[in-house]
Length: 294
Image (tube, rainbow, N blue to C red; front, side, top):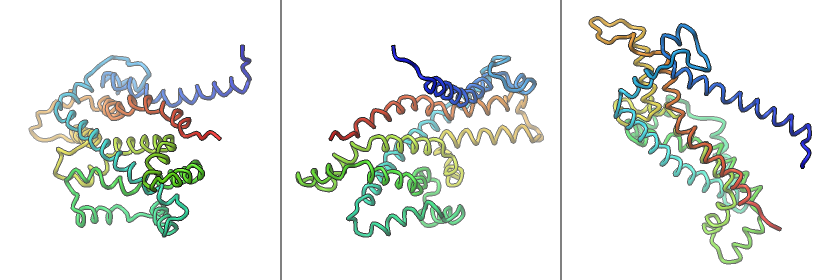
């Protein structure tokens, strides 16, 4: 039987504490979304519902087709955006990792410069709406996030430069492979760990994005993603809770204004929480696929 060292015991204890530190807020969030709104206001938050209630989710489900359409739009934007983004990021990172690329220093500096400075919110908005005319279109949810991921490009470039053996690349070139064939058949399969990581980060970025919809979808609410729809619901609940309108027929007491915010957060993170454990398994597997025997 293998002897367990003190270092392993301490390390496991530390990791358990960190895992609990990460999971407890999620448990508190889920419990609060399943707690009766009046009880939540009266007793505060707890890790177990003091009075179980599904009114927060019933209120959200009452929007019916809006939620389903917003979920579909989120999946569409996340899928299309991730595919295009990873193609651009991987191709550009591979290109600037080549020592013999003409203009490599200028191109690398241009990419790096965008990590330090940007045009600001107002000029960016004016450029996208006035020059490219993407306002109130599907492209408004897609394009802005494609053009600001310089960090991922530099991260992948460093991986290509340090983890792809030059001997393997030269051998492929000697065998008659073109640069594109080397990239597709050699570089990409050997870079699965970093590609999987960037894919995961990009998916989270697109799924959680709500700013582009807020800035550029001023009239086309049918293009709202789930984050934009949930954000609008929060604003409507806050308005109804803080304003008394003459002749108002809405029963404010029937709106679970506190617990519904927790339910909104649960709905927003649910797909990521489901997908992540399956994607995470590929990280270690990708590392072994990128190994070189010598």
